[in-house]
Amino acid sequence: MENIIQIRNLKFSYRPSRQPAIREIDLDIRKGEYIAIAGLSGCGKSTFCRCLNGLIPHFYRSGVMKGSVTVDGLDTRELPLYEITQKVGMVFQDPESQLMALTVERDIAFGPENLGLPREEIRARVEEALELVKIAHLRERAPHELSGGEQQRVAIASVLALQPKILVLDEPTANLDPAGAVDVLNIIENLQVQKKITVIIVEHRLELALQSATRLLIMHDGTLVFDDKPEKLIAKDIIPAEAYGVQMPSLIQLFTQLMDEGHSFSQIPFNIPLAASIILSELGSARSTSE
Ligand SMILES: Nc1ncnc2c1ncn2[C@@H]1O[C@H](COP(=O)(O)OP(=O)(O)OP(=O)(O)O)[C@@H](O)[C@H]1O
Ligand SMILES: [Mg+2]
Image (cartoon, rainbow, N blue to C red; front, side, top):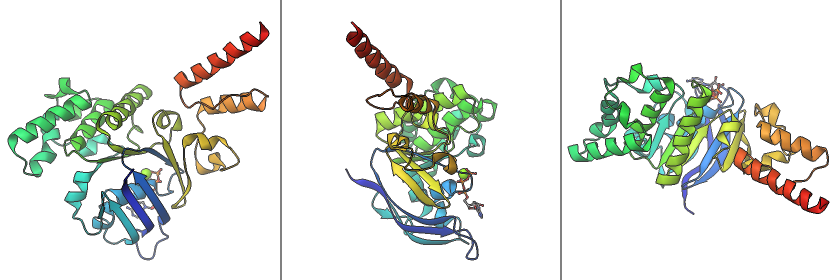
């Protein structure tokens, strides 16, 4: 499959005199991947996101960037920021900072209007975005009156109206309660499935992120220390996950403990349905051997 993002020898410091926030990253991301990024506070996750959406180098001009980031075949250093924004949609932790119009509908229309798109096209994009994140019923509401989870969905819809191929979300659920977080993550998963959007999400709570992510990146001190399928995390000698600020999902803890106690399973599950089917099949085979 084609690489939608290609990163070569990326390094970045916010000031020439400062320690680099990105020391060295090389990475290829294929179209349609769903990638979770975790790592300790200050390890460079947000900085990395800014390298993907062009804020670095275009906005952080006093910084020093080395190496290259290619998005959809184009080098971000050579593209103006507004063109990168159409390819890479960015959603932040605090949705309120992204919402400014008087109604949800106006907010979603803002991006396409700025692109100077025809009125019919704008209307169609707004409708599609409202449907995709299931907020058509909120269209007339004022964004600042909505709940955190609703606001985050509006922020995602506003970004989707630009029809990006890539969606980068920097801790989009950090300010949400557990139900709101699950809701937003379900919406994101749907987008990835329905629209084949490439998703890159910074999410500390692996428990949540790994419901859908098929690839996990762990950053430490400006580099990638883990880049693999989430299930590889379980080979626990590979990385000291806790030292990198990664909390093992409790399902994984449960299954590794059972394995330590001598039980064997065909695989270790990341979500409840899979866990249930593994346990049921174990129970089934245990029952048939005892009969
Ligand atoms: N705007 C900025 N100007 C100068 N230095 C910055 C800026 N933003 C981040 N840094 C520094 O760059 C390094 C990486 O920060 P970054 O925000 O990317 O980490 P993070 O992994 O996103 O952390 P967190 O989990 O707390 O959000 C840190 O040392 C931080 O102090
Ligand atoms: Mg951050």
